Image (cartoon, rainbow, N blue to C red; front, side, top):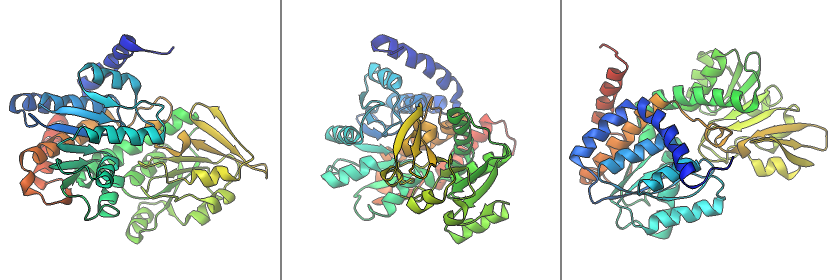
Length: 395
């Protein structure tokens, strides 16, 4: 059944009721913001996955006086949540089925409304503003992801004229969200989307950052046989000490049955790897951008590409082999079928980091210089205390 209009809003509201009830940290800061109004007369421009959990974050910012103008990340927007946010008076661009070109237009629309503060996820909005020269009014920003932090310190280094607090630099996010929540949601999404069993299956996790650590740990906890590819010597050493098989992709391509990328880097799985894989191997990406699997190279020499189930494509070759691609190479725990994403508690923690970092930008921008910054230590410690209290942990 296709939902439209009021029915779409009602569907989204029912989903949000459950999410709101489990995000106690955000509920508390919403009450604080409603009284202190740190974003009064400020417009916050947002580019982030538009799902129920991010909707709760945007409601918190609006309670603090912010005018919200937002778009989703490509491929993960949930239309019923967009409908709810629009019904609350927010300016929201984008839909689930937007093309990459439409997504770029959505970013331009957000920037055309001249936000004072940016909340970004992957660096798309910040990069677009730098390219277009639409940065004069912006006093500061936050960036959610590893991928966006890499862009700020790489291609955008020295080009962003305002401070950006990188949420992913926080140890709270790295441990709570990246390791444990991404690890859990990726394994759960793999089982839900493919309906394949984990025990005894051979998995290759490419990247042993915080997300890769979590994916490898949760796969092994469910009985998966796990190998890790990691080019950084220290992380590779850690993976080996953690008891995982460690090797190069060229050595593991013929061994693995499932390959999960978690690097934030482009084309970490390419044509030479595809040629070594056994027929039926599954390819999935949990990095922010849909570039870790070289999908164009994968399909360039295929005899046929066909969708065998929602979000599952079978790429068939002349030699009789086929490889299975999940969610078109996009972040499959959010862009795949029936997306759930990370656990509510982890996003409650992560979005409290977002909310309080945005408050710091709004109230004390002069304390921060232009470019990327980690979350201030005092915020990390205050949020850790709040999280421990909700967990009823005595210290």
